[in-house]
Amino acid sequence: MDATFWITVVLIVALGTIGGVLFKSGTNTLGTIDYRRLLEIRISSPTVVFAGLLVFSVLLFFYSGFSLGEHSFAAKYLFTPIIFLALIMLAASRFLIGVPLSVTGLGRLTGLLTALGVIATAIASVLVFKETFSTRELAGLALAVVAVILLGE
Image 1 (cartoon, rainbow, N blue to C red):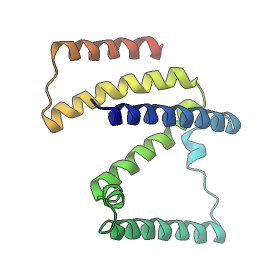
Image 2: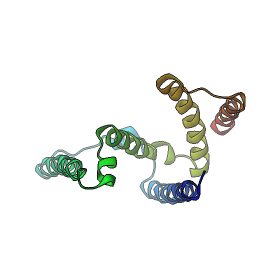
Image 3: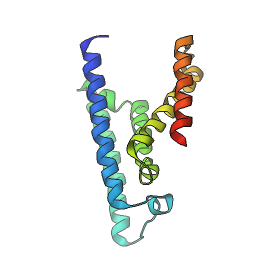
Image 4: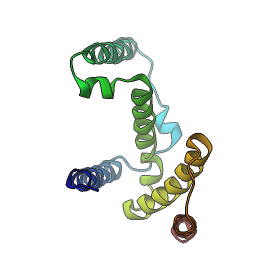
């Protein structure tokens, strides 16, 4: 693996770590977050107007970005429908992380989610992409299961 790979990995880890610390700081200021609070909406004229503007702006954002794809590979990459959908799902998972993060430590939750993510991703990779794993890789997955048990207690 070349330098670009490792520079990108370090950048991903650094941005993810900074993002995690900022997210935990934000949840600390809001107190316990639960689904009741997340679904709390006060219906009013401004709420309807702003929600409509939000939906319109998201649609405009996607249309503009998709159209820009003919002129920029980065836009084509970002706004390829399946990639954009994947990013929406990743963003939704990051949004929901606030629920457990508001009641536990950042390090503990990150370890638990990472281990569970490794296991779930490995299973999905086998089912969707027909990937195979060596004995060594399976041993690593078994360690992830042990990590889930230890971190989840």
